[in-house]
Amino acid sequence: MGFLSLLKQDMEVVFDQDPAARTYIEVFLTYSGLHAIWGHRLAHAFYNKKFFFIARFISQITRFFTGIEIHPGAKIGRRFFIDHGMGVVIGETCEIGDNVTIFQGVTLGGTGKEKGKRHPTLKDNALVATGAKVLGSITIGESSKIGAGSVVLEDVPDHSTVVGIPGRIVVQNGERVRKDLDHHKLPDPISEVFKEMKAEIEELKQELAQLKGVKKDDD
Image (cartoon, rainbow, N blue to C red; front, side, top):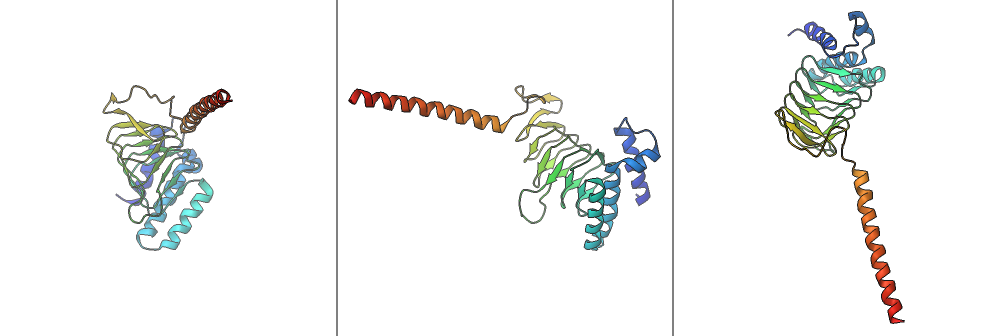
């Protein structure tokens, strides 16, 4: 597929995914997600030719104007759509298939200073919702969905829906896997810690009261 045909598909997918898109001139001039993808495609071309400095320079200029950071080494397929996009980060060894959609605040990142493949792979038709973090060399399966605010650290099978911190599969192949977790009832790890601390404090109070009672009896 030619480079210009690829850019044309990048624009067409905006009309498929965003009902607010009205005209080609509006999309061409005002959609930062589209600008970020086009900037990446140019940077990636230089990256593949081992002009690494030029590639990084283009990616940083694109980041400055769009608020979207895509490493020039990332491999991105056709019809990739970034909705709004501010705060999106895509790492160097990410591999993104065709017809993938991500929203603002998404991070496709690593988990440390490991070498080699250290960023996620998103297969065709995957969707990653607002603020989700997908970390490490893991695979998000075909047509799978990551819920808003989720943190995903393990592979996700095809045709699955994941929500929560850490991410858990709630729907797979159209069947509900977990019945005790809904999209509007995501786990709150901070709240859980406070509950555990409260329970421990109550236990300590009871033990202290018992010790005071024993001391009084001795007196």
